[in-house]
Image 1: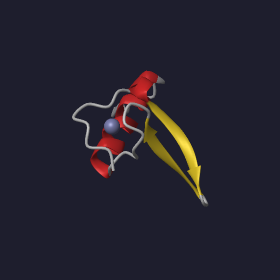
Image 2: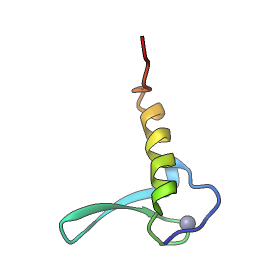
Image 3: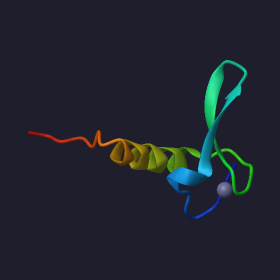
Image 4: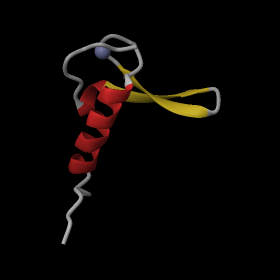
Length: 55
Ligand SMILES: [Zn+2]
């Protein structure tokens, strides 16, 4: 598991492992842990402009 303090959008690539797709940190070559993955998902959502807006 990756334990880097900060993982940015540009450092993540997706790999297929068995039946599922996992996020892999290019810098260290390890998979993101759950906390990092949820942080990354938020960053990705922002990047794509799908930021959640509650009206
Ligand atoms: Zn890492």
